[in-house]
Image (cartoon, rainbow over all chains, first blue to last red):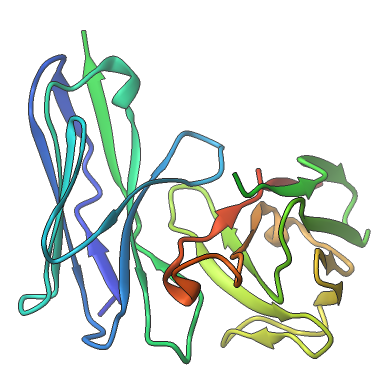
Length: 111
Length: 120
């Protein structure tokens, strides 16, 4: 089983739509959680951190459920510029400080 | 904000060539840097953890004699792909974390722009 699992998509949605991505992780000792965005052939860029209390940044809302080991990202009012691959990223316990990436969910927002 | 510079951004070379990729933290010190590799349509996979002043830690399945890592200063780590072959063609990307930033180990990492390596 992969350490971080995501639905690869693609998700094809019209502009203005609301879209949700889900992610599960296997290591219950994981400490930190992030959503990164990666455009084609580019480096990943941090979108937002994820907390149990939820985290909202404009049109983006991220949520963490530690009991279910489940992370979500909600994008409201999708823009064409939101088209990208969204990576669910987990950092393990303090003994392992690298990031573990999901395979990413591809989003294509259409006019 | 924290910036990581990676060079070169694109390399095309013949099979058997050794290629060196540099990763620099420009405005912070990084005792640890990470090297990832991403094949087309796949996720980033950690190759090794580069530790300043000591040996790198390699992930299972990554040949340490083929992927040489040197982290000689607090702002520079290099990855050398020795005797590269077509199967080494990939997107290599480094990251670093400012260990002195508030939040410590829970701070997100800063990525370089990546190096696209194509071996003919």
